[in-house]
Every structure is written in C-alpha cells, then in structure tokens.
Length: 218
Ligand code: SAH
Image 1: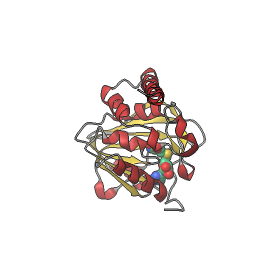
Image 2: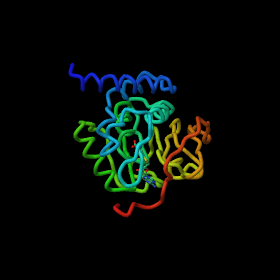
Image 3: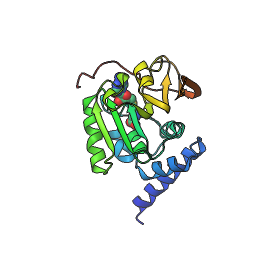
Image 4: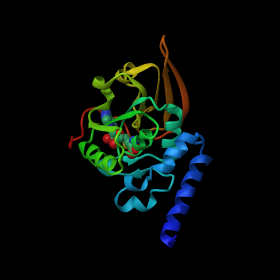
C-alpha cells in the first residue's frame, strides 16, 4: 500500500471508531457508513476534512451534517430493506446515500436546485440507482409518492410539519430536529400508531432551519 492509501485507510478506521464511540452501534448502519465514502460529498477547501466527525460547509450556505449525527439519526429511523423513505434536506446527498444502502427506495428533496443537481450527479456516478432527488419545498412532503414508511428531516422546524405527519404510514417512523432555528434543537422520533402519534426525545442537536419556499436558484 502506498503512504497516501495507508493514510486514507487509517483515517477511515478512525472515522468508524468515532462513530462507535458516539453511540452508532447498529451493524447495518455502520456497514452502510463504511461503504459510502464521505469524501466525494465534501467539496473545495473542506475536502481534506471529510473524515472528521464535524459538520462542514457545502454550497448554498448549507452544511453537511456531522457523521455521528447522521449515524444516530439513521439508527433511530430503524430502516428495513422494504422501506420507502423520504428525506427532506438533500444538501450534499450524504445522508440519502447512506439511506440508499438500507432502504428499497429513497426520495430526497431540497429547496435549492443547485444542491439537487450536484447530489444527483454524485448518485449517478456512485451507481446509487434507488435514490430520486427532486427540487421541492419539503415542508409539504412529497404528496405524489406518499405515504412513506420512514421520513427523515435534516433541517429544523419549530414543530413537526403537519403534511409530513400525514404522509407517514401507520407503523411508520419519522426522525427530525425541532426547535428555534438559532437555539439548540431537540432531535425527536415520531412513531405513528393506529390511534395517533407517539413522540420520544433523543438528544440535543443543531441544524440549519427548515425554510419555506424554493431557494432563489430553485
Ligand atoms: N442531509 C444533508 C444535510 C442537509 S442541510 C446532507 O447529508 O448533506 C439542510 C438542507 O435542508 C439544506 O440543503 C437546505 O437547503 C434544505 N432545506 C431547508 N428547508 C427546506 C425545505 N423547506 N424543503 C426542502 N429542503 C429544505
């Protein structure tokens, strides 16, 4: 192995170790995060920091989430191989790529067309054929593909958006950050039962806000 290849291999091992030490213990989630290289999802001057457990800036003033938070949210979502999943907030596409390894089909939407375009190109280059990325205001969900087995929101709303609750199947699970955009938010899990919705609180997090309408480029 060349020095450079050895260095990358070591950084990837440290990356997986950091995930485990922060509570990502689900074997399927860890395997998915081992298969999907975070490198290509981080561009420009921050590319060299792709294997650090840090959120990093991406285009359109947005951020790619911290890997351990991606792992913990994916774990809380308890995705099964038959699931149809909706992600609100495509961003770099990294979270959707992880989900593509665990689910039957992943729909991911972002309000910024430029992000959707870049993420789609990456999905094609990586042969992730079960992801469909669309430009849309995800606070309304994706009515034409609803209902969903699982919904994950990677931008913070003050409360779970009503259309997303309505587009969750009975028995379905949604994971999302809620709270004021500049304060610390709470990551919650919503499970839909025959009779209503059960909520449990997972941990404090910090996400960019869920913003209504399409981006100026959208
Ligand atoms: N999941 C991403 C990180 C998302 S950052 C990743 O893995 O890289 C949050 C994203 O949510 C941003 O790209 C932002 O444009 C998007 N967003 C914010 N409000 C939205 C809305 N109403 N509908 C769709 N996307 C939204």
